[in-house]
Length: 188
Length: 183
Image (cartoon, rainbow over the protein chains, first blue to last red):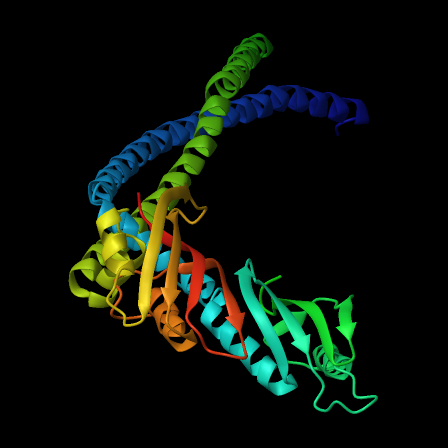
């Protein structure tokens, strides 16, 4: 029969034996893992280097082909024109002065106003106007036509122009003179 | 006797374990870690080069398409002549001094202007002319801005003339035009 003391002694001896073994196994495993990971990374890096070099060579080939094509000025011009055609056309349309002259003539006919002078720049149209009443009767003032014009521009929608404030009118009831400044609606 | 042998064996294992551990730490710190960082860096570089290849490839394809289009598309050829040809005074003069009945051009002056943010340059052309009536002026303005018979298209930067809505008389017109070109 083993006594409790002898069992404990045996256990202690067994522990003493197993501790170096465990430590040895653990450290050997760690070493093996470190070596394996290092070897894997080393070869993987070599492979990556090869791939990177191949890609860089490919890029150089593309760049030289691109430069060769770009040395032809016509190709660059074509690219720029293609990319900017819409904005160029929009710019030409926005500055279509003929359309604005026609619109001024339409306004003149509609409100029976006499316009003199036409100046267009940067989306602004300046002209001078004279309003003569339809009759020479008392109370028929040319300013009514001015009022109608301004009212329509202040309350209307979808018009080609925005009318700048008309802040001064000169003359007398049979002949009212004033200046007009229109802003093309799409140009701010 | 057995205990002594066992102790020796244990000592040997302990020494070996320590050697393995130290080697693991040294290799791990001085080599594996470095290789790891290098791996991450190289992976990033590889991804970047792959992206650059795709980018350059599509750029090259676009340029090749443009080259083909220049050869085959009459519309593109006309557009290049209209907005992307070089600045040539003779071309401008031929384009502006067109024989339109009722338009007499008095003066013309040109400056090469500046390069715009879109990559094309914008020249300034000042023009003074006499038109026999408003309709003729209208025809000429349309010719300058939007005509297939004109090899150039101009932007009307400013225009002024003594409009008189009461009578349609000959008018003297001053205008400044913008013309896109490639330099």
